[in-house]
Image 1 (tube, rainbow, N blue to C red):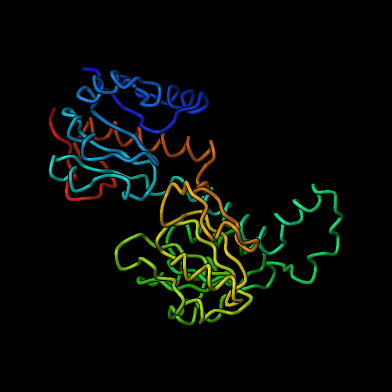
Image 2 (image 1 turned 60 degrees about the vertical axis):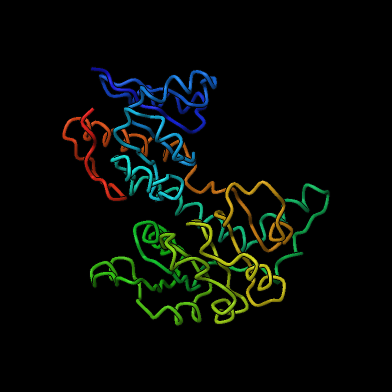
Length: 327
């Protein structure tokens, strides 16, 4: 019996080429964005597995997909899946835990360098006909010798740490679960209480899951502990930073800059105050977005779907259900 996989997100030709090349034997892959409304309604009851990245898998979709065996994410977050409904329907929600670490790590380093070297302003001035060769030298910095502080020191944070070691950065971190002595030695990382990380860092990187207790974990109180020259980068999840407080901190000199790839309200389809600040680099949750990451993530996602079909027990499930329905 052939099984049907529904890919929910936009599928440009390059993505279709990758998915078709990786398609397991005995499976069809359907593309949501290439269907008419009528075709979508007809397809949902015939779908056995779904794959999504940013697309919101709602309760209405889950209930309409009466043959659905598993919802497969291509990232680690599950906030865009109605997990309560999936639990109620007996459908596991699985993630890909380590597919996008390299892309996110490289992007975060890019944001740090762009902030430190005023890359956006230099480009804009140059294209406007100026020659700002000396304009930003007195407010530009090197990463060399700076202290990067991590709140959360899981897989992606360690990928970032691996890269900033090449810039001769000092690495400090706080995590609810301290890393082993071997890991700390490998990355040259020093564990500190959270407040000490905030006080000592030149660069703050936030890498924690979006759970209720972490919402607005970086607010005015925390920013006031930081150096006036410090910058914050967030390529993790929105809602971790209080954006109103961040605006105030950036406009009053409490901290120096921010690289924001994730936002409290995504997609951000309106102009918000932070967008008007020169000391903010604003990007649309693009840090995982490379074709290399896509290939790695969907390869792992498809492998997990095959495992679920063959054994009934997929890996890396979230929610309350860890076994697929026998359909």
